[in-house]
Length: 165
Image 1 (cartoon, rainbow, N blue to C red):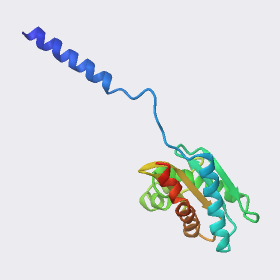
Image 2: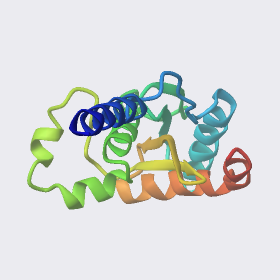
Image 3: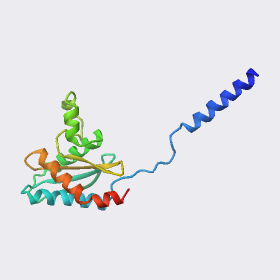
Image 4: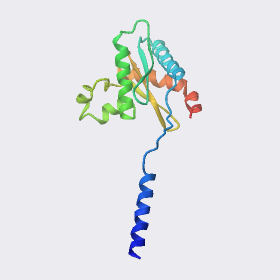
């Protein structure tokens, strides 16, 4: 009887060990090229309407560049800053301003990580509860204004984001 119980337990452990392994093939939602292009265009147009010359960058859920646009008179450095703000949002899983507020204890160290800039202006792109990537904007006189342009761009394309669920 004891041998039967031991074998049964061993069988259950082996079966459960195999079912707990990660999936071999993953299905992942991500920002498409056309959506990325349209988001950066909308963000630049939004800031331009307010009198600001900015750059906007979309990165995917892994922080990989999908689209970038620099307005005619925006400084070239704004492209890098916009991308690094977007990367901060991807890293945190929330808008970059929330990372800045919530992690004051390590903010100086995070700014030393290559590709991350913990400033306001990086906004998470989500659809149906999935994190698709982030939109970073830089060049307006203040990160709060950068974030407003990014949020207006996402709102302008909200229907496409919801449809893409």
